[in-house]
Length: 365
Image (cartoon, rainbow, N blue to C red; front, side, top):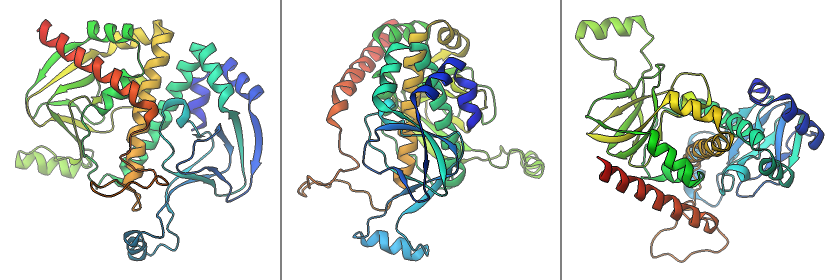
C-alpha cells in the first residue's frame, strides 16, 4: 500500500504530512481505532502490522453459538490485516458514520498520526491536496473491497438499498457539479441480459442507474482454458457467481477514475433498465481541469466505497443491534439501521437533487 500514497500525493503533500504528523511506536495489542467511536487522528502505518476485527457481543446467544461452531476462542473475529502504507482513522473525513471495526497492532508498529483538526483545515485551504488525498483513500478502499470480495464472494451481500449510492455522491457535490454531470451524461436504455461491464475489461463510462436492476457477478473460471473449452463445446457462456444486485440510484463503473486497474466484477442488466452514462474521456478531462470538482468527486467516491466496505464488515458481525418494531429503544445502544441526525439534511438535499435529475431527464427525452 505504500506506493499508493507515494504515487498519488505530491512531494509538498508528503512534506506537509511529515511536518504535521507525530511518529509514535505502538506496542502489540494497542487499539488504534475502536468500534463505534470517532477517531481523533488519521494514522498512516509506517512499519508493522495491524489487524481489523469485528466484535461479537458475549451476551448474544447466536454469537456464542457461531463462535462454538467455528471453534473461535474469542468473540472478536479477525477479518483483515493491514500492512505498511495503509491508512486508518479516515472515516471522519469522508463520512459521518462511526467505525464498525476495531483496529489494533499485531506486533510492535510505527505510525504517523495527523490530528483530525489540522487535516480538516488543510483540506479547506488546499483543494489540490484534498483531491489527491481523497483519490488515494478511494484506491485504498478499492483494494480492501477486492480483498473482501475474494474472501466473502461466495456469499450474497446483494440486499439492495435503493438510491443509497447516489445520495452518497449527490450529497457531496455542488449544484454546478450536478449540472455538468447532467450536461455530459447520456440517458441510455439497457435491455435485459445486456452486459455493460465485463470483469477485467475496459469501462467506457460512469453509470448511474435511474431505473431497473443489475446483477454483479465474478467469472472465476474465465481464465481457465479447460472451462472455456467445455463452455465452447456445450455452446454456453461461462457462468459467473452472482455476488450482489444493484438498483435505482446506485452507481457503477467508477474503477477507472480512481485507479488504472480493470473492473473486479461483471455488471449485467437483469431487466430492462435506464442508466445515465457519463463518458469516461469527458469525466477524466473534467477531473484534470477542475480541482474543486475533483476533490468533491473523489471524496464522494471514497464515501461510496467506505459505505460498501462498512456494509461488508457489518455482515461479518453476528452481534448487530437492529431495531425491531414494537420494542422499546435502548438509548445506550446504537442500532445498525439508526439514522445519524448529522446526515439527514445532506440526505434530504441529495434526494431532492436526484428527483430533479429524474424529472429533467423525463422532460428532455
